Image (cartoon, rainbow, N blue to C red):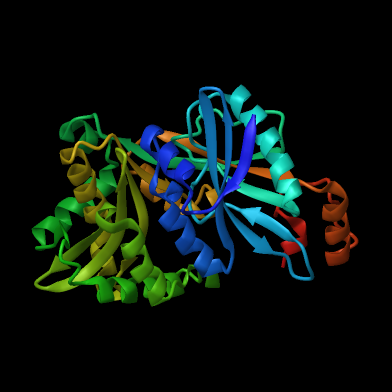
Length: 340
């Protein structure tokens, strides 16, 4: 097996994207954007063996006090490539990749798997943690079947919004980008979200540059006023619900339900295969997950893989953080030396 860390401009990275089903999380420009946000180095672990290959985007970060570790970019950038749906090959590829990460001086790696592209997680390497369900919509179904799968209270609120004059559409001219930013931040404040989720303007502007025509802005409006807005990304037959915000003034009309209903039909009309709505906060079975389940019964597990590359250094860092922590426990916050 040949294994190495690729920089974002490496031709091998683009070669994998040309042949393997992927999502926008795997694009080098997106990985570079996330790296800039987190002051990290964008790269991908690439492993090749005969007619099989694996590509895994990573952000290499400096550890406070010295050393390095790696984490997935924001989202679901699990391993892709020829053979990436074979747990046995993934196990071998990741095992080979550990040597590369060790040679690069890394202590650990935190990997978010893709609920659609990694249906069979690798076994026998690292610690696998299943967090909970995500919700996706099968776009091969008819519009009538989609409507029948929509929960009763969602159908009621969608019909009510339409009667009241709300309209959902794609803002192809990006006229309302500034309004989306405002609504998104208001929504994060309302939900008491972590500081990480309060993205600055350079993130949203960088997202447009990185994703180009893959990125779409959907708005729900009434008489010219924007009630809700959301970002959706279309890549290789997958449409991802990325971020959204709702105006306080229009919350009672539940405009996000109308938006989801509209995007479901829009994505189908464009001959995509699946609309992924994601899950609850941190994979929890919470009100956000239940909201999404109201649009489709199709669920897929979200899992993370925790790799300790240097056991001795990992244990030292954990002990320095809190001597009461057990470095062998890897099912909670990981890596433990970064815990609050």
